[in-house]
Length: 252
Image (tube, rainbow, N blue to C red; front, side, top):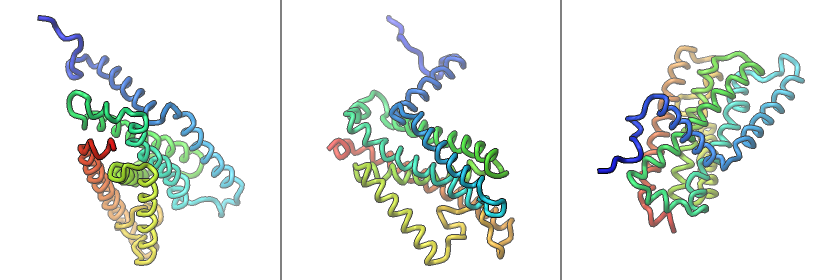
């Protein structure tokens, strides 16, 4: 009786497991960025460099505070990046005619998608930490990990929302437009109904503390908001994965 030519991942030695995990992560990164990872990183660094140059030329009293840094420097570029990448997750596979292969892979197709989406979110998390570290040394002092976690929660929700619409609409452009519309309506309604400084606002800014609210209460609201945002993002991701079961609808 012939023995199999491969071993299950759990039976490999620790060093071999780490090597296999790194190889899978590297290959998935190339697929996600379409081997243009240098261009994406360069664009973000250029954006940060321009903001830093503008901010450095201002007088000390006019320079960006933490509220502005959180929104303009950290959140905006990562939101644009996650919106684009999640728009392309399904459509790129469809355009390259590899979506059929994903459905015919032996075993659970959800494992394939979970590896892809897990890698994508791991990359966004690492970029959040890296940007937070860079901004810490160039713009202002803050908790590096706290800034990265807070920004990533919003990024994760927007990414899951984009992926959900991409699967449902079978269109990357449609998913991006609908996601942008939902975010705009949410922001406008927050201004109209005055909940843009409450725990229910998606773009909750933990550094923009109102004068009439106790800082400890504001910290509790920040925790509640970030946890709620992550839970909603996980639910959207779950429903997106469930929608991937409709093979014929996606391949049309």
